[in-house]
Image (cartoon, rainbow, N blue to C red; front, top):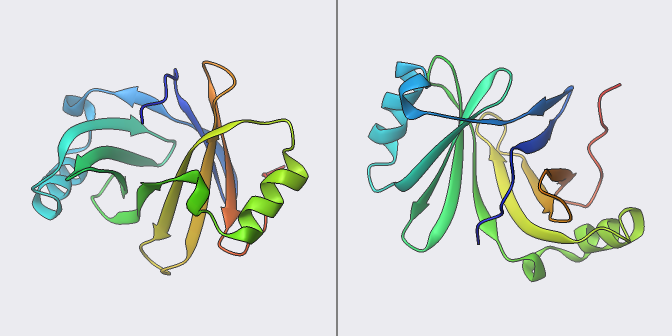
Length: 146
């Protein structure tokens, strides 16, 4: 499912960042090269830049996935779309409790490449600008930076 949006707003622990679409030619060569060496079956690749990292969203088989890179090509995180109904009860509870009037249209399970920790990013779909809520696997909100 594609979400029409101008950019993603993602919450990364310690900072809020705006993702901006970018041309593949503008991606740092190390990140670009690692992407296609590690994911040679990737199709329909689109790139976005966040403050300190780059995200490639791509299709592999029937699944939409993502991988986030540092500018030197280190994989920071990987993720894949999931159906909202597959979210765990603690995550569903947090969304219903803290965001009762929000409509979510996309969920992504993200794995931190360094720690193996899981987070879940749910995108709202009320406006042309998608807002993302990020929760831990047990439904805890990741605090927004001050």
